[in-house]
Structure formats: C-alpha cells, structure tokens
Image (tube, rainbow, N blue to C red; front, side, top):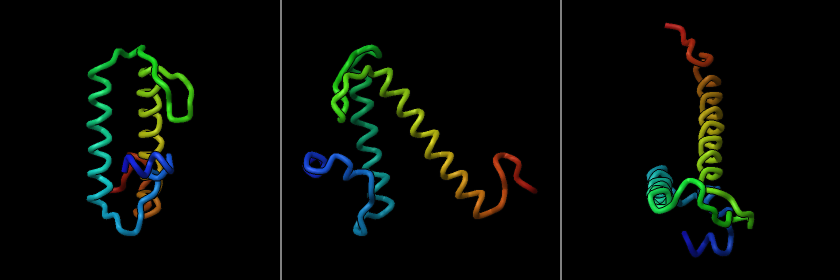
Length: 93
C-alpha cells in the first residue's frame, strides 16, 4: 500500500472490489500499530509534517483522530437508526 499512497495519497480512502472486510480491518490494524509506534517514540508536542505539507504537533494529530473516529461512529449510528428505527441509546425493549 505504501507504493500506492506515494502515487495517490488518498488511495486508502476507498475499498476496491477485490478487498474483503477482513482486508480492510487488517489494514486498519497495521496503520494503528504504526501510529502506536510513533506515539511511543515521540512527545505530545513534537512537530512533524502532515501529508498536506503543514507542520502539526502529535497532539493535533491525536485530536484529529478522535474527531474523525467520533464522526464516523456517528455515521454508523445513523445507519443503524435507519435500519432498526431506534434512536440513540433509547431503544425500545
């Protein structure tokens, strides 16, 4: 995937027809492990260059990850509500 990302920086944003759910979960696991290593090696205020060229702190990257995870979890909650009709944590028994 590294070679693909060098030519298309958003290639990991879409699943191809040949990719299974297991492939996607495995890719996420590898990405998470790589990021865990970065967190272990650097301080929260250390600065690096983001993919779009700006200088950002590790703190900013972590906040962005929390924000993105919350956003996508919200999307999944909306889909679930459309499927079963239950809203939020107030599910009928």
